[in-house]
Image (cartoon, rainbow, N blue to C red):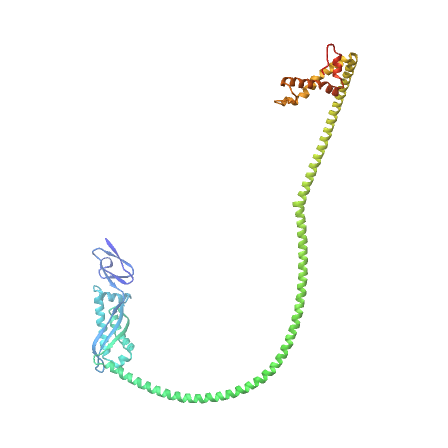
Length: 432
């Protein structure tokens, strides 16, 4: 039975014994390896960068001045197979802290050795050179352990006797002195240069002013000549421009008039077309319907007129036929009546007064009915008499008086004297 082990790119996996052989070992970086249970030893070595801070306190320099130096180093295990195998031999089984302590002691030893060969001024003046010397000297030793120095810098340099401060003060004083001298010399040179520059400036200014005056005079003369020429050309140009403008305005006006004429013609054409369209529209919407309606009304009127004429003719024919029939009937009736009257007259003539009397007597009830017809609608009749005597005698006398007035009335209506005719009847008396 076995087990698979994996390693990332920041560590080395070391397999030894078992499946890899009793005298061999296998190193895997960023991969995996197979181990046999109880027969294979599996160890890991970190390949990450380690930051170290080597510090040497109170180390005497070449001139016996004690300094305390602190540096910063970046180191890591080399991944080349041979050097990685060397590092595995040196550091397997140790923690990262233990590995850092071993490398730190090596760097501090070399740092102390380099400090003893240099003066304070050399160290102070060129820290980069000092750091490069330490790295160059220490690299072979740590390289034999499979370690690579990626960078080494000096972080801090101090002392307990203020040597560095004095060195800085002296250097500062020298620098200040040189600076003051430089400033004074610069100010002197600046004054001289300034005066020379001012003189040269005035010379140049005066010469420039003279040249400017000459140039201005020449300019004014040239300008006057140019202005005269320009004004002349300008006047000619303005006159020509005005003439051309007038011509162009006249031409434009002519074109505008032509355009207006064309527009008016077009408007006239449009109006004529519009009139024609409106005429057609009126014809189609008003005149044609009106004519159709007029024709309809006229036709209906003619039809009604013909109908009325025919009706009138028919009515006339009807009336004529009725009149003819009535006339024939009347004629027949008249003839019959005439024949009847003739026969009655002949009979009356044959019978004489007796027939006449019979005719009168037959007519009296009809006459009495016609006379009494208005009185039939009277509810009450009051007879007023102004003579003396009783009411009964007065009533009798009034009745007798009315009866006595009947024969004259009959005679007036029929021409028959009723009293004379009645007197001829046997046993009749005339009422007076």
